[in-house]
Length: 248
Image 1 (cartoon, one colour):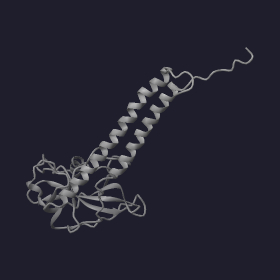
Image 2 (cartoon, rainbow, N blue to C red; image 1 turned 120 degrees about the vertical axis):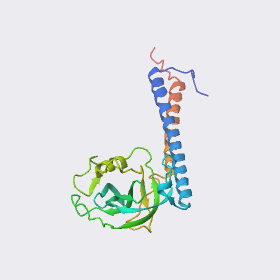
Image 3 (cartoon, rainbow, N blue to C red; image 1 turned 90 degrees about the horizontal axis):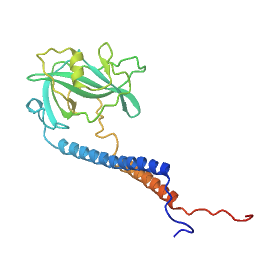
Image 4 (spheres, rainbow, N blue to C red; image 1 turned 135 degrees about the vertical axis):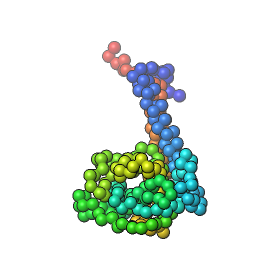
């Protein structure tokens, strides 16, 4: 197949490099395939539960899988404790998601995500949030955060109300609002539907990256692994060059 000597020439540096890097590249490829399947399953779960009739939030078992469950809940918005979830982009504009506690009639405090609103002309200007007074009946879907939340700014909330926050941690918001021990907390936020009182711009992508992109990333990692393996084999099996004997 090769001209001249074709035996394998062992190069310990290249071998060590290949042994260390090849499994890493392959593992990254398989990880991207796993991420693709996770996104597909999450999208399917969302589609399935969007077709279900809403149930009373108070009746739910909080230990069940509640992601995207359609719920109804009644209560009063706590307009004294409005939170603005920072760094939310909609159609190229920077803004906030408006998070308001709902004091339910017969149960816990539920943090309601009313949707997106734009940032003021200057970042220092906190926008005026339209407030809803009196009893409300809301419908929406439960949102359970998946994985670690991306933080793009200072983790500390602002001192004044409404408070600008960087992550939607219901336990932390509950403490910031200063509710007493006699009040219970529903552990997840609820994103209200388009017909609920107080709804703003609804923009909550189910998945941030399409499953097809993860598959493309996987192909890239596998291709790099194969190129590395090919270079390793080529370097070990390439024929030796013979020096000219002229002048000996």
